[in-house]
Amino acid sequence: MRSSGLALIASVAFASTSSAAGLKGIAPSLGGNYYFGEINESTAQFTPLATLPLGGINAVNQMTYFPDADKYVITAFLDFNTAYLITIDPYDYSMQAPFVPVPTSFVEGLEYSPALGGLVIAFGSNNFSNSLLLVNGFWQQMAIKTLATSNLDMDTLFVSGAEASLNKLDVNNSWQGHHRHIINNPFGTHSYTWTGADYWNLNHTDLAWHPTVGMNYVTQGSSLAVVHSLVNPPAVIGNYGGGYNVTALAYGPSPRTVQGTVILDDTVGSFPGTPRLISYQVVHNANVIHSGTMFMTTNSQWFQWQVSDNYNGPAEVVFNGSSFLRRKVPVNLSGPIVLTGPVNLQNGDPDFSGEVDAADIDLVIARFGNTYPSASPNPDADVDCTGEVDAADIDVVIANFGGVDD
Image (tube, rainbow, N blue to C red):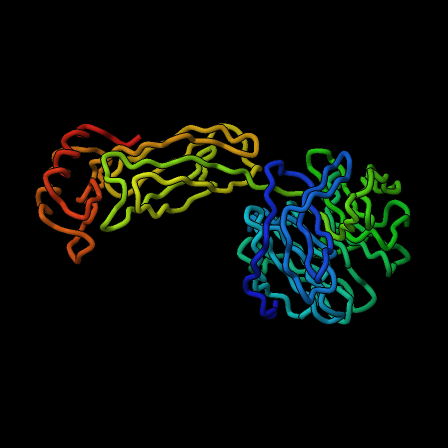
């Protein structure tokens, strides 16, 4: 897509510990902003999680969760010729406008399609979207197709799970006499199938397939409804409450917090020399689902990270770096907060071999008298982090002799 000028947009998050994978919604707020929040599927209650500063946007009527990019994606409508995509991070609610290879400046319906293996985007011009683009998690084009030369409009795209099919919905313009159609083979020799009744109204701006429940939910302005069958009208569940008017829906993850404290054994309280970099990973079923680096200037540091609550069950938090042996901490990914407790990292491996041995003693002796920061190599030989390699560092290595990585 053409550059929107919105490379990065900050957001203001509300504190919440009740989030879980489920329905999410977008609702307008005061001052041209929008709320991103979660929706209780039983009561329809809308709970804001973040305020999205989208001043200048006239409407947000489409949203989906794009698992390949691990982002929520919305359509930001400016006018009849200008609309673009914005991503929302599921964990810190920050926003970006990705560069998407759409040949026009107007996009509309969007939906992640597991069957097609990517994000499907409807685009066009003059407030009509008659073409489809399929992109992968790197926002690269996988397929593109113009479905009709005129009149076709795909305001809303959604997946009906029972059919594993892509549907288009246009509540204010009928196509072949109907508002909703299945698009068969959308990027090949396509055709349309109409099923159900034309019960749709102007408040039906977005639908979301809920894989756990096995049904579509649809927003109806100030109310949430569920579509038990596409041949029957949606059944109203209830009001969103708080005066919220939800315009876009998606099913997707929420943040789960992993927190604890890392303690670097056998070091001074505050490091006057070179900081220590400790890498970390959260590993679930042999897959790294979160990683980063801790920049430590003291021997103890509290951490808090966000991971997706799509991952559940046994996992490991792995710490490694500097002169400290690798430590694997078993955790169970469940609930909104996962605690590791204090994590002590054993010292004495400045050659990074994974074992405290004679080679580490030799290395410290070879660097004896060096001070840090300096141009001399391997500040990790200063294992106690005092800023100088001295006898105390040799003593630390000897005391931990024989230690190995987890």
